[in-house]
Image 1: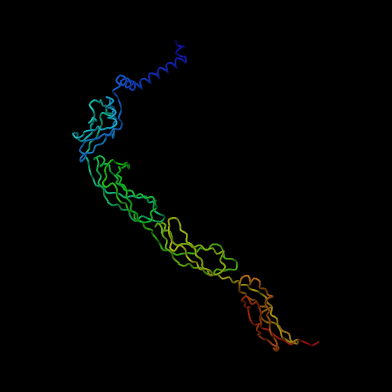
Image 2: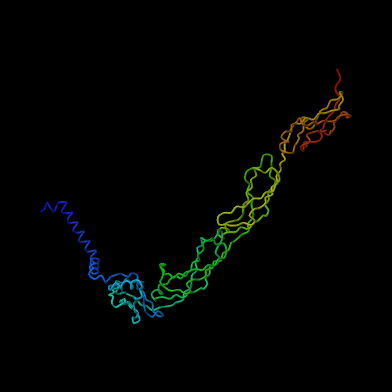
Length: 412
């Protein structure tokens, strides 16, 4: 026997028997219903689900909670009555609370206008309800909106609601739980102007749970007023790059010299100037350019959006040539000349002109002569007869030379 009980076949047989017993127990009601119907084919048992449950009570002064919205019916009787009853549902299932006082009560569920030839089972047969005094109280509505919907740089100047109060009606315990009465403006676009939207009023407890109450009116108008703060600031010029070689910056000026900047006040408080960046690397002559003004985060507008920058440059170069020799001319062979000043008989020349032209000028482009014809021996101040390049401006370090003329010593 022990070996048989330990065998796998014994376990399989026991498992099969247990499954069969379980199947019979689960389907016993169906078997019984089938047997009844087979025994009496003129009767039927059926279930009518989700039948609305009505309630009768003093709705003007009381509030009822705890009632299910629907119940299920099991009807047993002649098939000719069961089917029309299920289809038409012309009966009424209700709970009568007219004679019930305030408090918690267990009340039977009743049915009316149904054939007395049917046996009806209601599920549930009893309901537990709480009857409370109906209370109406007026509350101030707190308007709200999502500040993240404000367009960049805009600020909310005001938030209002119309009407400012609503009447809330419900069970006293629900009214006592009210902590917040809110209406939230809802919009699907950025806010950059005054906006009014209809908003649903929400009544919440301290944990922000929605309370089961009636609200009158259920919707209110929420208005948000917005402003775009602004500030006048000076324009400063920021140099970028360097002028081409041979070009000198004389001046730069902005027109206008001040602009109005719009944006959040906290950002405006940090703005002391607006910067116009000028790239000097391409400036080769006097010019006026338009430069846009860039905005940092929190700003949304600058008026005007760009300024004109007037740039004055000097493209002339300056160069100095030293040691230009002065050449005496027109003196007879019987005389000799000595240059007393400048020392060494040479002067300097300062050149100004276009950069490329000035660079090409050398000493050889100058001819400095002294016309000594007709002069007697002695010291003389003679003006230099200077000839030089015509395409640049030039000046000599001095325009006269002091000389001394002597007769040559001809004695053997």
